[in-house]
Length: 304
Image 1: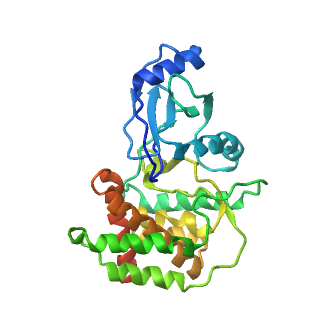
Image 2: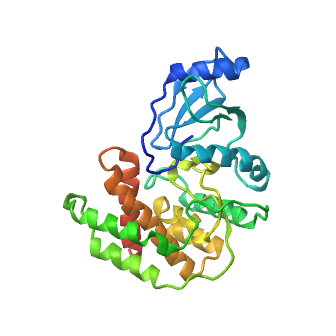
């Protein structure tokens, strides 16, 4: 399992000893099970395997606390409505032992994160992803939160332009800043689709997807961004994961119009442009995926 990309302030160190103490005090039935930190490229949560079939997930900073309550409320209600497995909350942990935030125990989900450029069945995976996104869009549960990334595209303008200017000062990254700005400005000038908001996962990064040995999607994890918003927000896999041919399969399966596709591409690009200077020295997985997005977006625009 993995965690979503964000920019938390002041991550709090946690370790196996803390998790053992929290489990022993709050879930004595699981005391004595092995605890091992699980490596992850995410920055919002720390994760620890608990025995063979559970995982403990603890926010590293206050910015991840809302995700805990969001998942506790919505995952049980969404699970039966989705075509893939999603995390199942088994235990609601509370602040204790010097740890100041709520935390959760989940059932372990088997699988591995797909890697852009190394997909076993990209066309089939594209269909699986489209099926998941379509199922999310079809949900009609009332009382939905506002999706973390579901607001207007223009709300990302200042941060996107600032990231481009920062990348101009890092020539070794080789980003064609004028080209990415042209993509961004083209999307800003494209009118919104004008339809109602839809249910979104909101963070369909490769680290939040699990595939089996055959390369098929088995699980989607990390629903901290879930809610209703712009459907373009769940088009991220088209550029952060899928090659060109599979990208078209994904688009056709969802029936995405030109304006929504344009906005989805720009949103994915914006996320990558902001992530690259931030993570290039600290998180190789996120920086590499950001570079992949920039190449994929510019390649698509140039017809490659």
